[in-house]
Length: 418
Image (cartoon, rainbow, N blue to C red; front, side, top):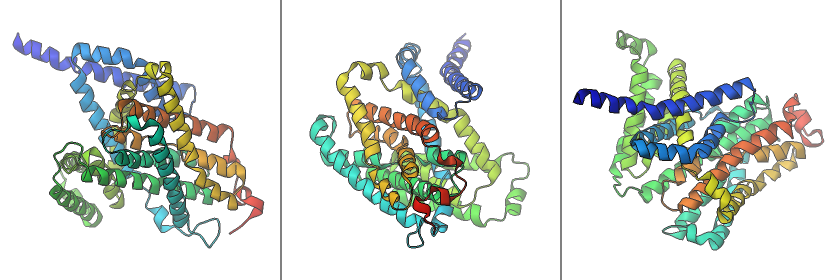
């Protein structure tokens, strides 16, 4: 009888998984049937989570599913950060001379834009603290720094696919946008990780474990870079999916170690993805990892994330709604340095470029765990980030359809050529 009851309790844990995966599958079907390619899947997943939040949270508390939700949420965040690291395209650093003019490289131009955007983000964050200082917890300067990183960040995992879908990734402006997005996301993760190590959230910081993480990353890079594929295949004979298993173990191990350095989930999982990308991971294994993350854990993560945002409370609370709108506008305004591209490109090219790089979500999600913002500010920041991932892609496609241009010559101002 006791065994039967334990089996029932274990299988009951499947209920939230069934609900979450069912919702994500339904969203994918709706997007496919109605051909809503303008809206990223994860945006709808967050929105559905926000709408169902009250019901789902009460349901989880009533049936004791909070621990299951926490595990799924953590695994989803780990895979999201890992795949973001795996999406890093190192070619943009090698092909840095393809710029609007021969005097400026793509990488240098991207760094210049990032510097200007971080400066504006810092100024806004400082001013924001003057009006909403009560939402900054602990040291005010720490909160200003984190808000600066959040406002200046860009989610390359959204931006780059949109460029490819719009058929402008091969153009110089496309390379500028993608290079900027990749460097911006990388810098955001590095800065957040550095902050977490210096100011550990858990209080259990063990910086010596950073050395262990570094050594593991070096070993992984050397293994996948220099070990002959034939030798690996010979060793793996009879061991099904050995490479896939090893990588999953490495991801979880690095995540565990990074949390004990104070860097929480960000450092280990993101760096693991970066290193494996640099080591030219086997394409089949990479596709399986992407399928595992994007097909299972990440959709559930975004739905649970949505349930954490009190959507109806924000709407009914004028102050929180105003704060969300202010942050949304700020995410766009701080990208004003992109207007520097008007030196070479037409307005109808620069404006959508400025819009599309406002897409961000990872930094806002990560900042929620740092304890520097009040829950209201954290929720407003995530809500604003969701809006930046919903509105710009639609405007990029509908209002500024420069994807139809066949060459850089059509995009450049006054027929400027390199």
